[in-house]
Image 1: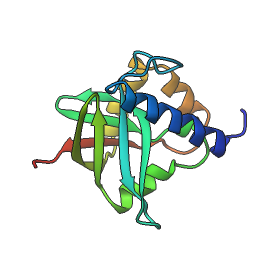
Image 2 (image 1 turned 90 degrees about the horizontal axis):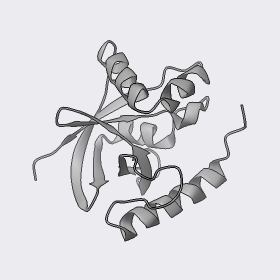
Image 3 (image 1 turned 180 degrees about the horizontal axis):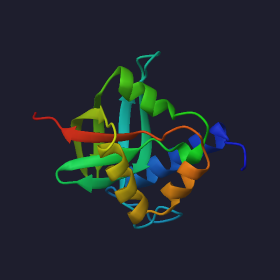
Image 4 (image 1 turned 135 degrees about the vertical axis):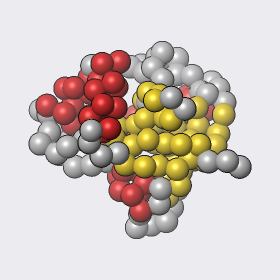
Length: 145
């Protein structure tokens, strides 16, 4: 497996965020064209600063499901640690922006939601095979404003 390149991933994500916002929540180029994509803005666990990350998602009823795969890297993504420390987050889907509460799921719900996303997006099954850590599954529930 290729070494995970944090700098290249940050640059890729920044371009994706810019394209998402410039096109009303749509991505017109690259591997995420047509994929259900959201922007997750977390509060840094250590820094307290906001960080925005583009992520694919699935739905479970009214809940939004995201997976902390980091493409099968050996460590959890930074946004996962941020959500553990500060579970209130801001979500952008399409042109809509709202606050949500993040909950880290436990089995058997975690497995059910992971399997559903892996069925819709087979790359996730490969990510789990690439790492020995159990990949966390997080549900996001819209907070009433």
